[in-house]
Image (cartoon, rainbow, N blue to C red; front, side, top):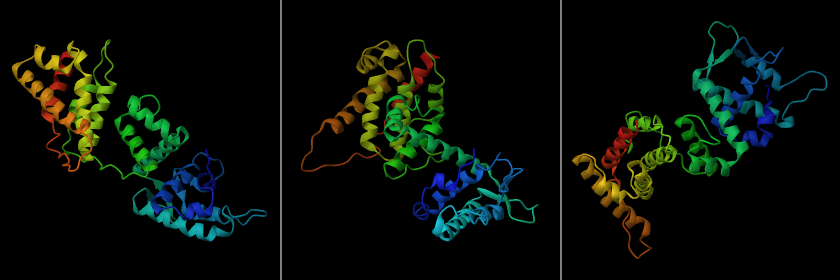
Length: 303
């Protein structure tokens, strides 16, 4: 469906205030919307004409006026800057077979279009609803999609709240909960237990780890160990540590997790403000080995 620039960016002043990458994303959405529109000269046979697009910005027909009125010349300059950014970033690829400048949208460009569509959907839902869904259901109800979509939703929430962006995950980067272990948890199914909260606690532990949110790591670790006892047929994690009939190495790891994680978490969560403070370090709230032993046993007894 065709979408005019002014439907995406209502005023010239708003358009001119945008950073080049933000404007580039909106320009890409506008260009893509020509696809399938009959008798248009901008998008033809999977290619986009730069010259025909620019011609549309300065109509010469009787009674036609520029979309942004007296500021159209400034707008055109900004649009060309955005176009050049799209080309430089490999989002628009010039077709060497064409004598005039015709471009195709790259695979990265198609991904950006999907991202923009999701951002627009979340705008309609509103910040409070999206954030509530991510926090309470792990994004299952409204956000949907695989984990990377939920990570994108958190990115959108931070953007809306003007918070610094999260550090991007890097291939091979150390995380608190291994991706392979998370994949095993996501594959579990049980008629008696819903694993969505457990999975989201693990995902948020990794987010907190990348962001160096050490208080959050302590609290989330405590929340996780308090969440899982019914999976072992117990009422508390202390019962799991003391009475579960696992291997000796499992019991030792869980006993340490029960005593150390609780003490560290309680120390940070329940200590009131005082004259002098020391902040936790990554090492102090690192219970990765104990958590992995715990999660691996959950996988083993549930499969």
